[in-house]
Each structure stands twice: as C-alpha cells, then as structure tokens.
Image (cartoon, rainbow, N blue to C red; front, top):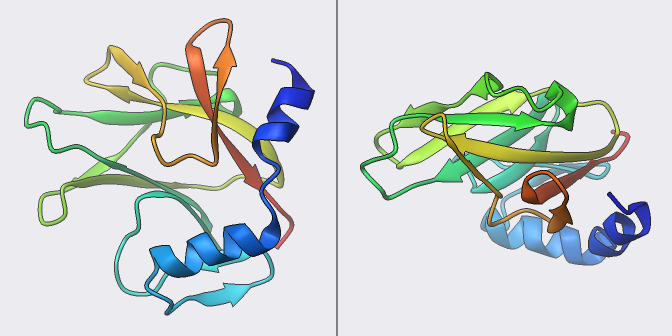
Length: 140
C-alpha cells in the first residue's frame, strides 16, 4: 500500500471531520479532543468513542446472516470480530479498541464476501482485496 496515497485519502481537515460528525449525530455530540461520541442513536460508519471504535454496517438485504469486522489490526483473519445485529435498526455493530494510528479494514458478509465500508473516510486500492477501507485513530 502506498503510504502517500493513504495520507492523501485521509487528508480531511479537522473542521470537515467535525462538521460531518455533528451532522451525523444531529448536532447533539459530546466532543472530547478529536473523538466524537454520539449520544442516543447508533450512527453508520465508524464512530470513535472513549472505549474504542464502533464499526456499524447497514444491510437491508435479508440474505445477510452474518457480518464480521477484519483488518490489518487483526492480521486480516477471516474469523475477525463478529458483529451483532439489531433488528430494530437493521444495523450490524461491534466496538473494537484501537491504539492511535492508521488502519485498514473490511467487513466479511456471510463468511465469503469481503466488502469496503461505504461510509469510510477513504476506500483505497489494495493488491490483495481490491479496495480496503481506512480509519485514522488519533490520541484522545
């Protein structure tokens, strides 16, 4: 993976990221440093919380029976970290603790379909998986 490409893709300004976070949470955020904690409802995409990163995937497809989070922080294991389905929202979610850094990740649908996060800060080309999603975790 070309590190300059990653840095270009994640080169969002703090103001833009803050504005996206506020609009995603309806403007009712509690902001601590660079982390955004949404109160009340689960937001799609990746939410950086005080206890880790909440990854949320939405699927309206009734054929989806399982969603697993995997990434370079898990050595791309197919087992990954299973996500929990909420039938009220139609969202799959999981919280995973990550140290500050830049990470790549994917969702594995039904054990075979590896997909990018459509709401990721960036989806960049990768020689193994086609494209991967990117998250940047900053110091709290």
